[in-house]
Image (cartoon, rainbow, N blue to C red; front, side):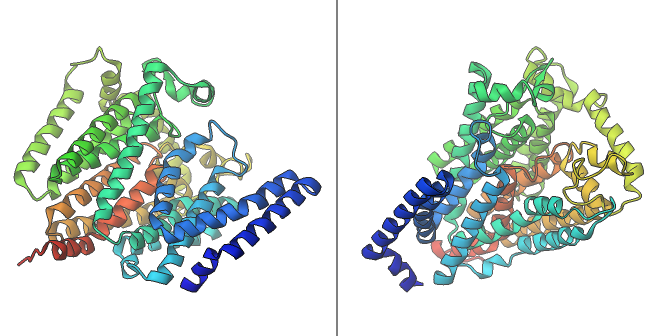
Length: 486
């Protein structure tokens, strides 16, 4: 491998490659097609960037995190030459390729790849994989299956491998939180600008057309930053708020603590201005789990008291009703809410059809693949409204049971690892915060399609991978600080 790298460093060979590629680029632009010439011209830059990613792995991870956070919002401003999904596939493929290539050279953390989270995701992937043979609608929809299996089951595996290999040191935890916090702060700042200075031309073009029914409401405008929509943004902000507010409890570094608290406050603001009622489930579920696994009765009592006061404030009082943001969030506790009842009615209608297709209509199948004359056309056109309903529709009752059983067992295992196998609070604290945040997102996915969406999905997969690497980090931390546990 060193020999391979040294060849790239040879000045003469590098110059020769650049000259040849430049000549090919000019020739293609003049005599064939400008687009082909441009593509050829990008080749040396892609090779150089790939080499940099292999040599400096943090570059590829920063790229992945940044693209993950901005790629969906970017589609409002520019028309990419290839679909966004393909762009993401290319980036995931590049990161995975460079990580594995670098690992062949240095063999970092190979054993860490085979953790429990990886095993659970492989089981889920295998169930999704056999769904390729689903022909409930009368035919097999291979393209639809391929387009969706990547997002809901392949990305978690790929990212788990990348993180397990890349996280060579327990300091990776705080480095990850630092990068996440900066990106989240930008998202909250963008929402602040939307609320106080209005939407820009690209945002207004979207919100006044496709997003009008869900974002321009009589109760007020819902803001979405550079996320796909307000629901995705609000739940993502709630996720970040839970993780950083809890992580701040355990860090002894003053500047780090202040940074975490600033992020928690900023993302709490983002949650409010999103106007997404389901996003309240994230902190409620996340803090509730934290109460049970924090291993400190003082913190548990304080957290429980704060949680109960917050719920009582929203559910049983009218304080602050003059503020539309508070009024909007308070409606989440209204069981007679019209939009909530519409969802229940849709699910009742679906239930009659789903009893005939225990394995669903097929992964990714929607109205474009199913004829209006087909018996299950209603199922294909019915809006899922949530991640769990999406799984129910496309993978059936069997698929939903498999998914929920995997999630329940996985979270029980994760809780046991953090409570019984991790001794150092400096490791257990931030990882507990991550687990609680992901648990909140899982609960919120009952009401919205947010669990597999960008940027929340990759953040969830990263957090869970780090949680299941906790014993490795804990042992490393103890050895580094000379801590001996009895």
